[in-house]
Image (cartoon, rainbow, N blue to C red; front, side):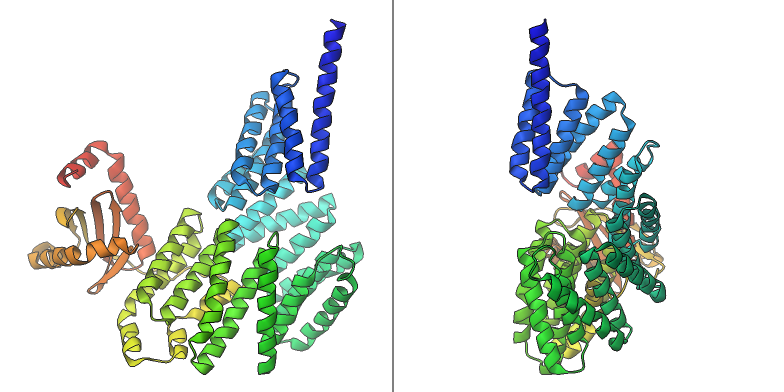
Length: 553
């Protein structure tokens, strides 16, 4: 018996030693080595039954952390869920709260913002949650609501995170929260934003946090430039330049991206054209640098892209030379690839919207519509509803302006006129972080008719909302004839709406059944109603079967 106990003790000690070594390799950023050690520990726990459910939970949690560090969110989520299952069986509230927080973090990195919110709230609902873990959850909530363009909620949770980080006295968290709060307030309370930036700078200098100091200086520089206070901005740029010179050869902290961005932004806003040329070169350098080293600083790639696009479009307006677009389009493609690889859907949607506007000024209207549909679909899929609504409104506006664009095409209007008509500057301002996304103004919806059609445009069901459609059979005939001619092309082009007379026609297809809704108003809200209607029909199995039978399925 003593020998058996000794074997068990030795085995348990070996398993714990493997876990300890795995954590060491993790903190050394040797993630593959860390995974091998953690997997060996897990194998021992399972095969020799050396561990309890708690031991398994600890192992799974570590493997989840390693998976996330490796960039494998799917693997990380799988292990996090296994850890959660064991901790629930043990009813360990603190560990459950930590698992929920970790799962929320994974979903946030995957771009599944609604699921991230769900697990954040589950974590906060547990009374035993530690203050350190609560701080992490509050920060995730703030980031998610910012990406969803719900700024009041983002600020509320970030203020709570700041208060808690001050209570716990976590210097880098205090500084980061101050910087982010200042960034959020730039749109509404500029003086308050400056207070947060100044306080962040003061604390960074006090605690020797070089990255925080550089970040605070960069934010102050761009803020004062935007307020046309270039003299003050220049003083902060001089301080950032000195800090960069002191740190660039030591190799401990890389603040080059902050220095280069601030310098480029200063030159971009100069009145001297040769400064604009140098700004272009710096922004291109930044894009190349961050493309090769994107971890943690991807936002600055997209800010740089927005500013470079602004400069190139200014040049394009002056010289009316389409070749200038040749410099920009490959950068757009590169940025989309980085956003897709990093599952950064917030930026992917914004860059896709810019891509659509660029297609428009090249007079490729069909491509612009298709890209808008793609961008809206991505935004809706990932819970970015405010962005989706804004893109849908841009699409509606384009439909209203189709005749104007035809005139522009026929008269070969200058690129400068096209840039103005496309309202591309608003899109670029949002990419640069210079303006918040405002929800479109609500417009009363006027329903005209709802039609259900089978393959080939055969009418299955109709419900006219207006008297005109109730009594005029020619309207139905003309619509069905039109649908037969454009329906196939419509779906093959990946579109979801088209202008039909004074109305907008919205279409959703389920198999061979097409739902057509004619209305005057905003497509985003109309689409929500149509999707809800279809879901209600599908929820009634007998009714849905009748529709499919009538449709010939």
